[in-house]
Image (tube, rainbow, N blue to C red; front, side, top):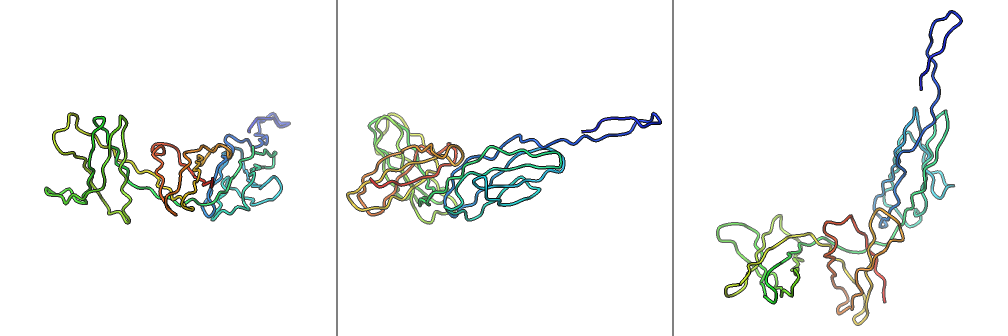
Length: 245
């Protein structure tokens, strides 16, 4: 901050008043999978500031002029409360703590989900082709029976080609033609013993670390099977956990 003073000769002279730092945005609480990268940031202002990052208020991690802390290959031992202390020669200010929760990796991958909407009680066949040529080579993918709500048909092909096209059809003349929507849907691998069951929960990447939501409790008919989270498209990034029942 600049101000004005006067000398004994009556001439004005510049005077600088130190301004302590301030924090506009504290770091965000978040959840991360072990082995992933975590980025913690604090938005602060003030002249000539430096940032000290602490874990659990005691363990000094780094002192830098950058207000960003990057954790690569994060481990369970790095879970805890992260605070940033912003300092300059006029003072210091401490951010509110950001909690970092580190969880085990849950195997999953995005798969194309073909969402079919049409006449209730109708049965539709879904095909795919890898080329939009005038005579595409259509290959059966599956079928869906509509029960009043849209139904999905999932393409779990590995590996997927660079492009793929889908169609839905039925024999005869349908009263109402179908409409198709294509979404990438998380396909989550559920391991376990046949006859057992597993509860699948999700949590948003950013937000309270205790805000787990149960998706489903799934009976296991194979030692490894897929669960498709059709509620995920269009939502903030999700992480998952498996709880044997």
